[in-house]
Image 1: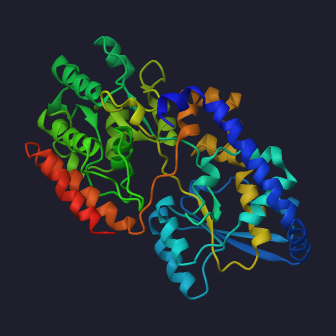
Image 2: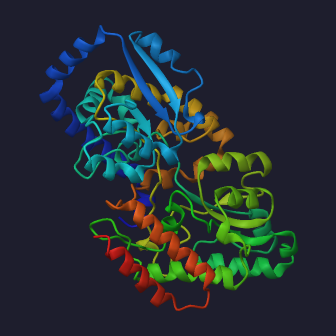
Length: 444
């Protein structure tokens, strides 16, 4: 459904989706309930240890599983921190030896690779159990919570509790001073950048430029693809981005234009996420995109929302004349369940604990937003993070990114394309798009 239509009907769509999900889960559970509760009874008496790898220390709840232990004294959680960037590789190594965690956190882009190797446990029946036990709690999860942990084979292999969509932010005070409106299209971004460049508000001698972006080689190509999707980009059935298209050519033209027009720091090709964020928060950039809600929390400590900075509306900046083709996707870090686990019932209770409304709220307030509707409507949350009110619709309509079986190679090709565009701002963008499409097609 186009962004414009989904944006205006998001709550009705959500209600209908939950209703359909509820009907399906009830039917499935009716068939599976006897065996589920029997399995639960068998496991409830034994002391079990569930090992969980967290992708960041900040994802670990501050009560460190005290609430879980109080309710389920037979379950002990052994928490370890394995960085998101390393988790999948480490997991595969341990899994091959019959070892490793019961639950681990990694980038959602790895799910098809792991599931294709039968390394993930199908928790579908246990999520049915969750719904049967507490449908109100289950239905409070926004769609991306389970969608990001559902494989192409229809297996639910974990849960995602990160609910914040990426967004573009801009210096509202500077835009107001120049009489500029929020940039809704890619042309708006470029034109606003040129106005800012020529306004005297920014000093290149002091490292100030209109736009900050990531031009270096990052562990995820999400920042490139986020712009590609907003420009109306599409994918093949196998998950390859179709770069040799209007959206792909405009994507390349964007990188060429910002470099050619001196709208970005000339050293941007070596920049990572830290430099991008630092430039905006430190007053050296007027626009950045691909920003998560946890970064906005850091911004709020230095700049006041709706006074100094603001987010663009959901589905922006899109390609001129192609608003209905824009799509929103969300890069997530789900908790996946290893097929080596011997305690799926206990794992379910651990996942429920991590998704608990109070536990996920505590993590969400200090780090990453929770994938719960109640979190996004909570008065305390909205008071501390007022931008969430302007981004709820974006979170509700965000989809799971298409994933190719050789996603790591797709990543390399897209990074190569972006860096060539930045380094060759006068090259033919159409020829460049065709060149990289050939490299992508060779992966099928």
